[in-house]
Amino acid sequence: MSAMHTYPCGHRWQSEGPAPLTCPACGAAVAPTWAFCGHCSVRIAGSTQAHLPAVSPPAIPSPRRADDADGRRGRRQPPASRQRRVRPVTVLASAVVLVFLASLVLLIVDDATTHGRYTSTHHKLVSARQSLATTQTAVATTRSQLASTTSQRDQLQSQLADARTRLDGVRGSLATAQNRVNLQASEMSQLKTCLDGFSNALQADLYGDYSAGLSALQSVETACRAAQNAVG
Image (cartoon, rainbow, N blue to C red; front, side, top):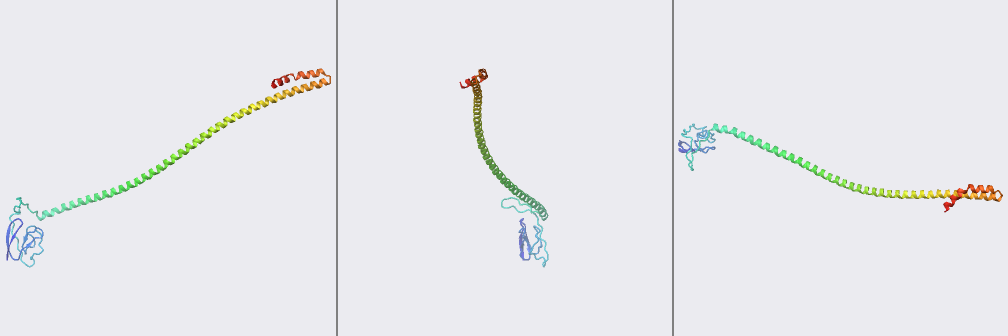
């Protein structure tokens, strides 16, 4: 049984035997007896190579595809060796992406740690501000109490100064009274001396001793004058 096959590049070939298969990788038609695709070299799973003689695929004259609907020239499919070279590039790109993701995760973790530290520091700052406000209130209360105590002290000092002034006045009055008492005592002493002299003179006159009486009066003359001046 013959069948007509068409490659993706546009070339056709006719084979004899069972119905053709399709390559699972590139979609090209392959013969049932082929073990590998003649276009992309992928192994064909449903081939009958194990119980049929192998038939080599015809040579492909040109690796280029026919012009597409837009009129652009198709590009040559990369060979299997080039596809194998692409794998290290893909692995490298994957490694770069993984490194980037790991760095991003580390940045997120570091940002979370920094945010936690910032939150803790913020709480400490708020607590310190509250303590400072409490301390400032206590200081203001203490200053108010100190001002009140200072005012009371000033009042007490004023009262003490007034009391001292009064005490000085009382002391002056007492001194004046003491001086008067002393003066009166001196006047009384002089008056007594004068009276004693008169008494002695009277006694001498009673006994007829006039010279003794006169002497007694002369001895108290000064005291009698002082007493007369004090009495006024």
